[in-house]
Amino acid sequence: MNGLIIINKEKDKTSRDVVNTLNHLFNTKKIGHTGTLDPLATGVLVCVIGKYTKLVELLSSETKEYIAEIKLGVLTDTLDITGNVISTNTFNITKDVILKVFNNFPKEYNQTVPIYSSVHVNGKRLYDYARTNTPVTLPKRKVSIYNLELISFSNDIITFKTKVSKGTYIRSLIQDICSNLNTIGTMNNLIRTKQGNFSINDSYTINDIKNGNYKLLNIKEFLNYPIIELPDTLINKVLNGNSIMNTFNIQDKVIFTYKSQDIAIYQVQETNLKPYIML
Image (cartoon, rainbow, N blue to C red; front, side, top):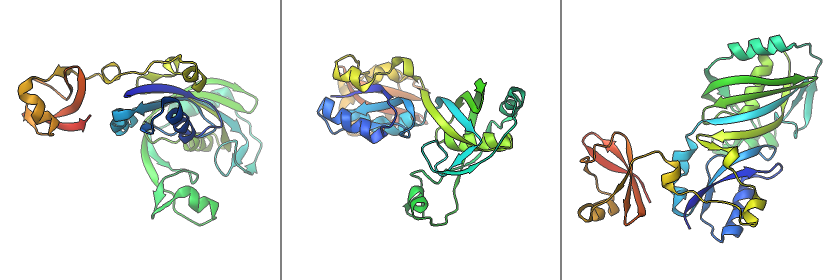
């Protein structure tokens, strides 16, 4: 079985929990996902099955879109509402101030990785440092914030929509927003509504899958690359991972098939095509 499926992850489940459930439902261990969601978060979790697990890195590079909630005046150790409260304060913020911060927020900056994350520093995951109260310098990553859109502001909750680059932590983004608002806050809720072209509107719940109400996508339906059926004269070269002449006038990448079977993704290298992902 090979395919891609968009899961609408439920709250209080890890991304690994979802994969484990799919392993059982599809009766295969060869399943992966293309971007972790925290247990608190819901929404789009793109999962790949069979040989499509080789596409994880390619699909993980996509932009992501979220709807998030900030609870103002509260800070936790995990930077989300599930953590231990470490600070509280009062605040006096207006909608106009929020809009000004959103409008002036940098489109690209070096974001601090939260300590409760799986990023490695000196051979240890950051959350291991957090759990043992071991001091560590948190790394920074360059991220892109393509938009920040205020959805609502009521009492102590700001709800906003954002589109960001791969590797952006929404918990850290919320900290930076709150810093610009001269207050503290924590992530109260998070929904991933899009990853690349994969939308929550096209997703399935685990119950949908249990009831047989789902569709697996094939590579031709989610990768916008030219598709070329290989002639008999080239199939062995491609199967062996050899470079071939770009007689097809490909500009970037191409999906090669043979007898309607997915064989490989090749990419342009000067005048040749070389293997990118062997399927």
